[in-house]
Amino acid sequence: MNIGLVRHFKVDYEPDNRWMTSDQFNQWVERYDLSDVCVSAFLDGDLKWDVCLCSDLYRAAKTADIIYKGPVIKTAQLREIRMSWPSQSKLRLHYYVWQMIARLAWYFSHPSQEESRRESVLRARQFIDHIEETYQQSNVLIVSHGAFMKCLTQELLRRGYKGKRFVHPKNGKLYTFTR
Image (cartoon, rainbow, N blue to C red; front, side, top):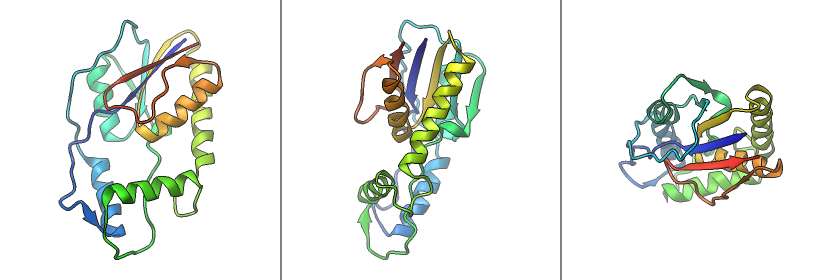
């Protein structure tokens, strides 16, 4: 069984102002989720993919429709781990700093985040269980998002799949795992 992971193409959205309050950051996340992608070249390797599953968020669904020739199965199980900052801080930080704070809050399962790290890991395990049960001998292409791809990768490696680890997955790049 081969599982291919692809992070959606780069999102075509930059904030009007990179320095923002927490409320502006949350608004930026909402607009980012609705934005289009910058289509780029995709190298699909030598494997023929039997099925493609993707996040139901627009950027992943559009990427999947472009790179996979066939029906695409969209699911909320592959959505990105949501980022937000619930307090109404007037402090202006660069949006990268807000992203780092939100990811650290998620990593340490801070209650400010909608999904804890434990819940994300469990979601990845359940999804890989579903893939292994449903598509036993198939080559499965998955289009998802950076942070959740890390959870999927950790679970695949834990189960004995072989593949290249990544620190920050590149947009539109295929990462293949084999068992």
